Length: 125
Image (cartoon, rainbow, N blue to C red; front, side, top):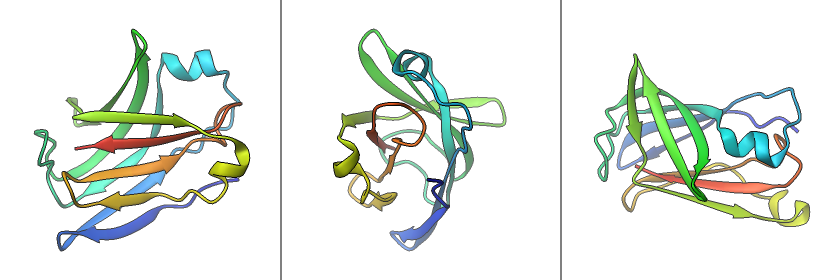
């Protein structure tokens, strides 16, 4: 399965997330070491972080048993206020779609097609 870009508006601003197309099947350990998960294009700056409006490469990694998400743009790196990672079964995750929310704004996306165990990620900006 290959996800397509998801576009919407949050607080009247355009938002878009395009999942990375990772062709190599990764182990959980490889994935936890860190990987680019997609590209975020946001007209709305972060309200819990200093993430500016713009186009950002989104990178997720597990460090000392805690998940982190970073956005990179033009050599600048911004850390998400919170990263929530939930492991789900293949049945639970097959209907999950990329979404955005307004409260503290955030976006969530599925990652089951990148690794052997399905995960659902939420990044809070």
